[in-house]
Amino acid sequence: MRAAALSLVALAALFVTPTPRILTTTALAADDALAEIERLADEGEKWFREAGDTDAPNADRKKARKEAYARLKKARTLLDDLLDADQSRVEELDSLYSRITMMLFWVKKEAAIGELEGGGPVIRSGPSGKSPSGKSTGGEKKSGIGGATRASGDSGAKPAENGGGTGAGESAAPPENAAPAAPAGPTPAEELAEITSYESAHPGDVPGLHDLYTAFLAAHPDPALAEYGTALTKREALDRKLKDVYRTLRDDDPAELAEQGDAAIGPLVAQLVEDLQPGHDQAVRIRAADYLGSLGSTIAVKPLLAILREEKGGVIADSCAEALAAIGGRVTCNRLIRMRADEFMQGYVVEILGTVVRRGGPEGRIAGENLAEYVLTRDASLQAGAVESLHEAGSAGALGLAMLVHTAPAATRADLILHLGKQGDPRTAGYLAHFMKAGVSGVEKKHARAARRAIESFGKPCVKYLIPALDEEDSAVWTAEMLRRLTGAKPKNDKRKTWARWYGKHRREFK
Figure: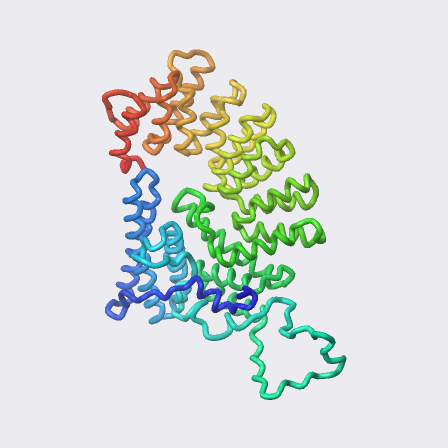
């Protein structure tokens, strides 16, 4: 069935599985219920963070996801019941509702199929089937949002065949015993109005709203519609809010997780990529690039790069570059730096990565690391420009800057090392350890002293990043000394494997 022929109810239902009630608030006073909800949310977040510990065995991470899911699911159920009983508290509890539902969204995304529910497909995204007010959302609505729709420009009438159409001013007689025509469904404007009305009343239902706007776009895939642009802008903001929560809780980028709403996103990207191809009007191509950036799907990265390289400059190429920067994330960065051999792409790669670095956060840090890796094989002027950009980016550029400190003039390295110490990113310790050489003098001694000060300021969180530096012969002595200072441990030797085994047993002490 064509997406344009599906109702929003049918589309939203793809994302929704009714959640059975485990416990109701009827036996709890409202204040006690709220205290229980907050306790479950806090415990759920603790377990969610545990599930993100990349040093932990897979079995421990899987257990943590299940623990997080059970608590967050119960918290959402209790909160739905509480709001059923007292809808006057919807606004007061919106932020709590948002926090719980967004963590649930991501724990489901990270889990394998059947992992959380013990069999059957796991809900990957979408409304819970229950709004903060206790009313049905998306998949449960009986009318309004989700009424029958058609693609823009489709009147529903078939063209005349073999000259059998009617002339102007004529009306065709209905066939004898014909079934009555189905009532027209709501217009795109009416459907969008209902979604935005729900959003204004319940902004905390971020995952549900994200899926409703995605379903709307899938039902009305004509980019020329005014409502398409409005819905896409709304979805973009919700998508960024969801990803920002993940970046905060995981200190990582979610781009490599399964696409949100894959079934609807793929056709949307395909339509916009078609509009982007040569042969279409320039305005249509620019709009397609802008919309691909707003959609934020990594599916669009490869075709955007292909058009960028084909255009070799100009307004279309610039629009593709802006779209790639808007999508950002690890997938975009990785594809960009693979183009080391393409001299034409050099300026665009630096520009796109620089834009993402300036956005900050884990996404900016990932872009900064990729920018540093890219310019390491380039000329000194490009390296100097990257050092300056990463320095200006503050904490987001710290990891990339640490990779490039050795390319900076010797006279400025100590200041850059101390700057890195102030940014507080323990990941930089492994790079700074290279400057802690024993038996040096002059400017190298100044670098070593600055590196020791910076690493000491990071404290215990930098231990895991220092251990690999034990392989560096020139700095191994001071690296081992710093590890002993930070941990108080005294392993039988200072080999990397020995320290790695020790860290594996004590990793929980160094978060």
